Length: 206
Figure 1 (cartoon, rainbow, N blue to C red):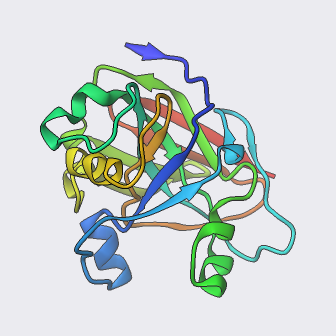
Figure 2: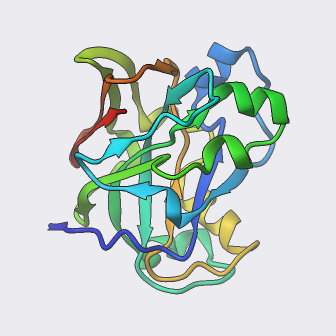
């Protein structure tokens, strides 16, 4: 079942380096624990809305991600009960000012500009996310193409891990990382995130 998202989470928690192919692409060691960070809800835009290229940013990247929408408040959730806390799944583009990420050596500024969290087109409540295709297209050209079976940390473990750090509230978003193939966008580019069983999230850079 598809539900129109309200796009008003208390928090957006994202996962860094959670695809084996992305780790290989970056020549980085597989992490022992999930690397998590936050985006502010003010970064959210919906399908068809414009991604604003900030003044002074020299490289702006797309990152296709599968996002989880929390449907029940939870703290210290056991892995075997995680499904009880999931409302559904949607597409997310973790837009990143890559030059600022490298300059700051931490991720808050690079990932938190307004419009840096395209989300949608809806919440899919009936989905097995264990092995689905995830892709990104830039101006119609395929850039990322992987499957969630390439996760380093599976969804049940990831949600349980995060819930031991912070209470998850209804509507919160947890994003599961991006596969190999990240790259830059330019003004007037059109970016599309496509996830099997969910649909397509399209936005333009202005």
